[in-house]
Amino acid sequence: MQDNRAPEEIVAERAQERYDGLMQKNMEGLKEAFKFTTPSFRQYTTPEQYNARVAGRGMWNAAKVNKVSCEEDVCDVVIDVTYTSPQMGLPITRPLDEKWIRIEDKWWVYHK
Image 1 (cartoon, rainbow, N blue to C red):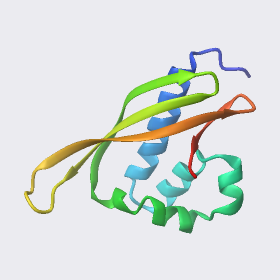
Image 2: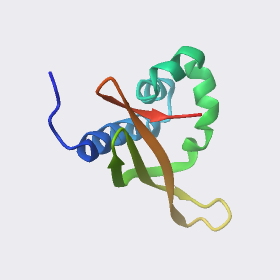
Image 3: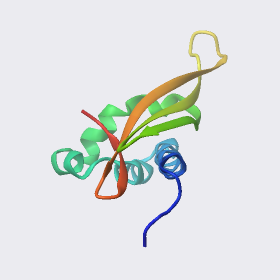
Image 4: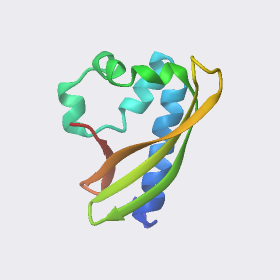
């Protein structure tokens, strides 16, 4: 079934689902997040290797999609990630930027 929503809405939903998986901070959540990577990335990367790429997620307290802007088959996504500073003990929120690309009418997070 074709999704007729705007690309920004679809990507925002998928990006949040991916980060919700990462926020579980366990292998099951990681595998859920891994499903949002491009098919070619999954072909050459294992979930265990992917775990090393997102190792900092263990310190995160929250992750929320802030902004999505799309042109053609590429979307720029800003995720606000909140973590507690080990030095100051204070919550800090910083933006993480990522690209999402459309392949055969489905949106995927792009990793190099």
